[in-house]
Image 1 (cartoon, rainbow over the protein chains, first blue to last red):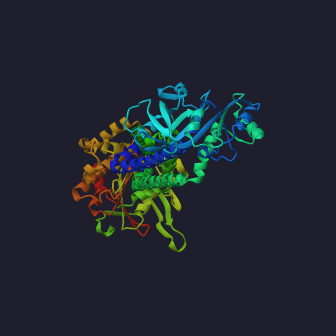
Image 2 (image 1 turned 30 degrees about the vertical axis):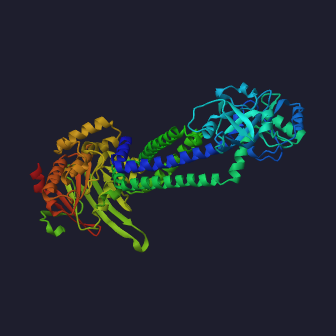
Length: 380
Length: 255
């Protein structure tokens, strides 16, 4: 009878494609919007995740997110180093400055100042040049997306010069870095060089990156640092989520995306549930005849469930395929960097689709289950 | 309506079959719908037999209870009171899945509107009862093609219902009703949607089916054109049996 259920479903191509379209549309809308939302949220704290060589971030106790850290005195670095659980600690600057190009154009850029001797926090993958070139005077490294933003449609060319705070900066490398929340270029330089790039201020360092003495004891080390220095200390993941949490709670992004995702779910659910419900109702006579001929209610339930799952599977597959296609097409667009089909979104939407389709199947099944088989003797 | 028929003989409400036990025995069957002021007695104290090897016509005006009666005989409705047995099996003793299984094995249905699956072709439609019984699809469809041949539709076995005339669709429905060799064939207004010739063809086919002494055919009909095909005519009015008429010449004619 599974075969009969399948033929009932696909035999009417118009209704079948209507059902599949409803689910594909809902899947596409939800998966794409969730993936973009997650991608954007990840971008807000992508620079935290990019630092792979130090698991602990230390900052002013009042810091709310990565872009808002005030400078702290250099003496704090010594205090952190004096915490027994800390193996080593280095300074880090992160801020935003304005770059003026040779053409006279200017661009806001994110600037990282790395510890001169260790370069902890440097990008892990270079596309051109070498990290050690940062030891040259006025040297900076830029991320690839930033290069395309500052010098659009131009080949990678090292040695380019531009100005940061009226001071010459020389491009010595291009690296791969995660896209930031804003589509600003990300520049890396040595801490001592950055002093010249940033307007003079009493303190420059706003983060300390540290390594716990015991490899798997980052959490306890953070607590010890906070206890002994009064500074805020977070593991990489904690700081990532703190930053993401800030954007989630203080911007309209989650509300807007939430509305779109919710509407996608509602529209998809409504289209799918209504079409599937109507499909089943239109087949009531057939189900009634089957019941009269000796098909049990449980068998009917399986048939409706099978139809629902088949439609859900095909619709979901097409929807996910379309979403993957969208991200495949847009993967090389600079300002969409970091946005891709999130596996968790695909799984979550898959579960949502199953819920939608099973709910419609259950609602539609009730009509079939309570149907008196004697109804088949009513003409018309 | 019953007065329009040339009745050959009138018998008491219960007759005995000289060839053996009846295929269907109804004793004091009553079926009520609704409660209180809205209660309707659709079948009222009906007692009758249906014999094997015969076609029994159930006639009467609309709302007289004939569809309710065959629904009870076919195990689709439970009577409010009274007993019905099919080939000695009391339907009262069957509940739930046992009743469904009994129906699947022993009852064949022919509906007024054919109730064919629009997305299955003729052979696949006719194969449905075997599929319900758990037969493999290929075997079931092969068997269905043979049955379709016996109802004169061998060349249309791959046609969808929408590609068949009303008469052809009804013959597919008859093939479907017969494929699992049921002992009771219940037909609800099988000629109501057909022209005269198609209706006649369908009734001739049913008459041939009814010859089998292991089977009984019950036909509910309004159609006076088909009365000649029945060996017995049970006439109902207001939920009661008005008369039972035998047509012995028809038995002779079809044998």
